[in-house]
Amino acid sequence: MQRQGGFLIGKVHRLSGRIFSRKLKEHDINEINPAQGRILFALWQKDGVPIQELARKTALGKSTLTRMLDTLEKSGHLYRVFPHDDRRKVLIQLTEENKKMKAAYEKVSGEMTELFYEGFNEREIDAFETYLERVFNNLAKHEHE
Image (cartoon, rainbow, N blue to C red):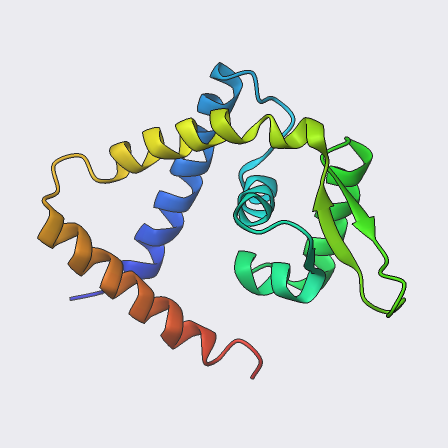
């Protein structure tokens, strides 16, 4: 029997991205795509972080992350801070305007979680997330080969 885990994960990713984008628009969050949302979500959890930490938290490559940060900075969602004690370090900080978006974004995230787990019980959700984490860790070991 041919296994389809990777294929199914890809399909789930694409479909959930389309639904997520639609839900964001329903909540008047029009300019944020799902990948940019991951960046903002990480910053809402902890603001003022170095780019390296943000790359790790979002699982985005540094060049992809840099491009997205440029776009988010141009659209007024964040800005870069250069600490006086180390000019090589760059911290990413949210704007006050962006912080107001957090509640609506979290509402959409909650709605997506409900869609993902519709019909699942707690035990099934725990098992599923454990398996996904194992798949992710298996892949992460081979990322830089």
